Amino acid sequence: MKKKRILIILAVIAVCSYVGYKVYMRPPSESAMVTYAKEGIEKSLRPESAKKEFKDLQYVEQERTSESVMAHVCGIVTAIDENSGKKLYQERFIVSLEYNDTGRKRYLYRKNMLIPRDNDPGSIINKTGNDIWNEKCKK
Image (tube, rainbow, N blue to C red):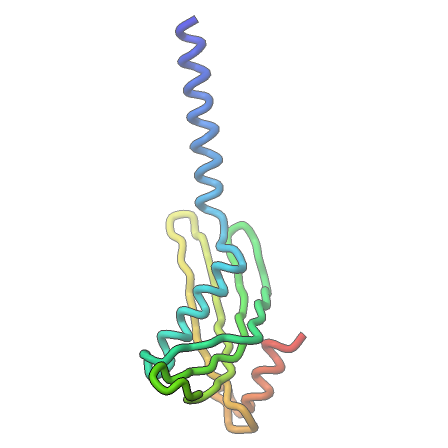
Protein backbone atom coordinates (compact mmCIF):
# COMPACT_ATOMS: atom_id res chain seq x y z
CA MET A 1 0.00 0.00 0.00
CA LYS A 2 2.81 2.40 0.88
CA LYS A 3 4.70 1.61 -2.36
CA LYS A 4 1.55 2.27 -4.37
CA ARG A 5 1.17 5.73 -2.80
CA ILE A 6 4.79 6.56 -3.51
CA LEU A 7 4.40 5.50 -7.16
CA ILE A 8 1.25 7.63 -7.53
CA ILE A 9 2.99 10.65 -5.99
CA LEU A 10 6.00 10.21 -8.29
CA ALA A 11 3.70 9.88 -11.32
CA VAL A 12 1.84 13.08 -10.35
CA ILE A 13 5.13 14.94 -9.88
CA ALA A 14 6.37 13.74 -13.29
CA VAL A 15 3.16 14.78 -15.07
CA CYS A 16 3.09 18.20 -13.36
CA SER A 17 6.76 18.77 -14.19
CA TYR A 18 6.18 17.92 -17.85
CA VAL A 19 3.12 20.17 -18.13
CA GLY A 20 4.93 23.02 -16.35
CA TYR A 21 7.91 22.67 -18.67
CA LYS A 22 5.68 22.78 -21.77
CA VAL A 23 3.84 25.87 -20.50
CA TYR A 24 7.10 27.63 -19.64
CA MET A 25 8.78 26.79 -22.94
CA ARG A 26 5.97 27.85 -25.27
CA PRO A 27 6.56 30.78 -27.65
CA PRO A 28 5.47 34.24 -26.45
CA SER A 29 1.87 35.28 -27.03
CA GLU A 30 0.74 38.07 -29.33
CA SER A 31 0.23 40.47 -26.42
CA ALA A 32 3.72 39.73 -25.05
CA MET A 33 5.26 40.45 -28.46
CA VAL A 34 3.34 43.75 -28.77
CA THR A 35 4.43 44.78 -25.26
CA TYR A 36 8.07 43.99 -26.10
CA ALA A 37 7.79 46.06 -29.29
CA LYS A 38 6.29 49.03 -27.44
CA GLU A 39 9.12 48.91 -24.88
CA GLY A 40 11.67 49.06 -27.70
CA ILE A 41 10.04 52.09 -29.30
CA GLU A 42 9.72 53.88 -25.95
CA LYS A 43 13.43 53.39 -25.27
CA SER A 44 14.53 54.56 -28.72
CA LEU A 45 12.54 57.80 -28.90
CA ARG A 46 13.75 61.11 -27.48
CA PRO A 47 13.22 62.77 -25.10
CA GLU A 48 12.90 59.81 -22.78
CA SER A 49 10.91 61.86 -20.27
CA ALA A 50 8.13 62.52 -22.79
CA LYS A 51 4.94 60.52 -22.46
CA LYS A 52 4.40 58.16 -25.40
CA GLU A 53 0.95 57.27 -26.73
CA PHE A 54 0.44 54.41 -29.17
CA LYS A 55 -2.40 54.07 -31.64
CA ASP A 56 -3.33 51.96 -34.66
CA LEU A 57 -1.20 49.04 -33.47
CA GLN A 58 -1.13 46.08 -35.85
CA TYR A 59 0.39 42.70 -35.11
CA VAL A 60 1.39 40.99 -38.37
CA GLU A 61 2.57 37.44 -37.82
CA GLN A 62 4.62 35.94 -40.64
CA GLU A 63 5.39 32.55 -39.14
CA ARG A 64 4.63 30.68 -35.92
CA THR A 65 5.85 27.22 -34.98
CA SER A 66 6.47 25.58 -31.62
CA GLU A 67 10.12 26.73 -31.81
CA SER A 68 9.96 30.11 -33.54
CA VAL A 69 7.87 33.20 -34.18
CA MET A 70 8.51 35.91 -36.77
CA ALA A 71 6.29 38.99 -36.64
CA HIS A 72 6.03 42.74 -37.15
CA VAL A 73 4.31 45.28 -34.95
CA CYS A 74 3.28 48.45 -36.77
CA GLY A 75 1.71 51.60 -35.42
CA ILE A 76 1.90 55.28 -34.69
CA VAL A 77 3.56 56.74 -31.61
CA THR A 78 2.99 60.27 -30.36
CA ALA A 79 5.40 61.94 -27.93
CA ILE A 80 3.74 64.40 -25.56
CA ASP A 81 5.56 66.84 -23.28
CA GLU A 82 4.59 65.98 -19.70
CA ASN A 83 4.81 69.58 -18.45
CA SER A 84 2.90 71.45 -21.14
CA GLY A 85 0.87 68.59 -22.61
CA LYS A 86 1.87 69.67 -26.13
CA LYS A 87 2.45 67.14 -28.88
CA LEU A 88 6.18 67.06 -29.66
CA TYR A 89 6.03 64.80 -32.71
CA GLN A 90 4.28 61.80 -34.22
CA GLU A 91 6.06 58.92 -35.97
CA ARG A 92 5.07 55.71 -37.71
CA PHE A 93 7.09 52.69 -36.69
CA ILE A 94 7.69 49.05 -37.51
CA VAL A 95 9.26 46.68 -35.02
CA SER A 96 10.48 43.35 -36.39
CA LEU A 97 10.47 40.57 -33.81
CA GLU A 98 12.05 37.14 -34.05
CA TYR A 99 11.80 34.48 -31.34
CA ASN A 100 13.76 31.22 -31.57
CA ASP A 101 14.11 28.27 -29.25
CA THR A 102 17.19 26.23 -30.15
CA GLY A 103 16.68 23.69 -27.38
CA ARG A 104 19.53 24.95 -25.24
CA LYS A 105 18.83 28.63 -25.56
CA ARG A 106 15.84 30.88 -26.20
CA TYR A 107 16.27 34.33 -27.65
CA LEU A 108 14.07 37.20 -28.80
CA TYR A 109 15.46 39.77 -31.25
CA ARG A 110 13.91 43.18 -31.77
CA LYS A 111 14.68 45.68 -34.55
CA ASN A 112 13.04 49.12 -34.42
CA MET A 113 12.46 51.18 -37.55
CA LEU A 114 10.90 54.66 -37.67
CA ILE A 115 9.17 55.30 -40.98
CA PRO A 116 9.29 58.76 -42.60
CA ARG A 117 5.86 60.25 -43.32
CA ASP A 118 6.00 61.34 -46.97
CA ASN A 119 8.28 60.24 -49.75
CA ASP A 120 11.48 60.89 -47.84
CA PRO A 121 14.18 58.36 -48.62
CA GLY A 122 13.86 55.31 -46.41
CA SER A 123 16.69 53.33 -44.95
CA ILE A 124 16.18 50.35 -47.25
CA ILE A 125 17.76 50.62 -50.74
CA ASN A 126 15.90 53.46 -52.47
CA LYS A 127 12.51 52.65 -51.00
CA THR A 128 10.40 55.45 -49.66
CA GLY A 129 8.85 55.40 -46.22
CA ASN A 130 5.41 54.75 -47.69
CA ASP A 131 6.71 51.77 -49.71
CA ILE A 132 8.17 50.17 -46.60
CA TRP A 133 5.00 50.85 -44.60
CA ASN A 134 2.73 49.40 -47.30
CA GLU A 135 4.92 46.33 -47.76
CA LYS A 136 5.09 45.42 -44.07
CA CYS A 137 1.87 46.72 -42.54
CA LYS A 138 -0.94 47.02 -45.06
CA LYS A 139 -3.26 44.06 -45.28
